[in-house]
Length: 257
Image 1 (cartoon, rainbow, N blue to C red):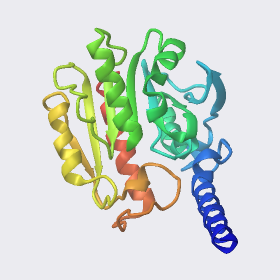
Image 2 (image 1 turned 180 degrees about the horizontal axis):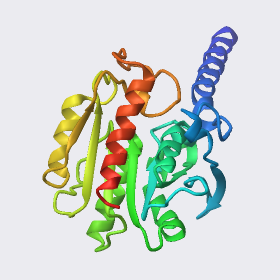
Image 3 (image 1 turned 135 degrees about the horizontal axis):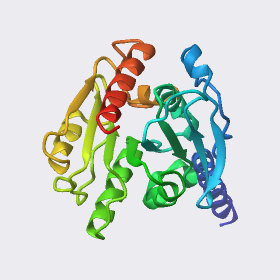
Image 4 (image 1 turned 135 degrees about the vertical axis):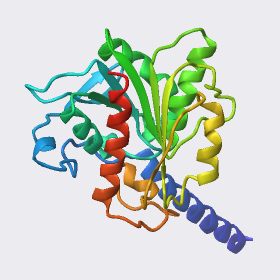
């Protein structure tokens, strides 16, 4: 009997160790460091991001550099699931050079699903007198759409636009009658977000929402966080994919300015 109990104890200990080991990377997130792998060219190097605390959480604010003509559009960007906010600093810098300010919030455990309404405090703090575009990658995009759908049901319209990157509105988040300007981007070689699901999500977006294929890109090319399990094989360089993303997003924002 003692031998059986000893074996049971060993099995329980191993199971607990495995569980803790598996959960540890989710519970303990890497440091939030600005400027890591975020500069694309000399122009983007001239942008100065700021780490702030707004609405009880940390935010990366990426304003246009001094001397740049500022547009009347603010971008609030929700990161993908388990992706650090700084992974999207490269895109925020590229938009800043073009005059657009972007704020990227940090979420608990890097999961936007923990607080889809995070944008409310950010819009109140940064968005006064400006048109707001909510953007999001993967899970972040789904939660951005969910937030706007929830606000719509409450009779509020906090944003003028929505940009989804390898994402689509979840079931029940119908924005087809919202009047929002919207843009959907799909990675051509995405192995994580199903192409049919992304295309099908257009039915829950305003009529005429363009679906832009980022040719040869994979799911992880929207953020700089390294390869992702289950993703596809790139058909273009990261730089080529990122240029397609910047051109599409900046073109969309330009239509709102």
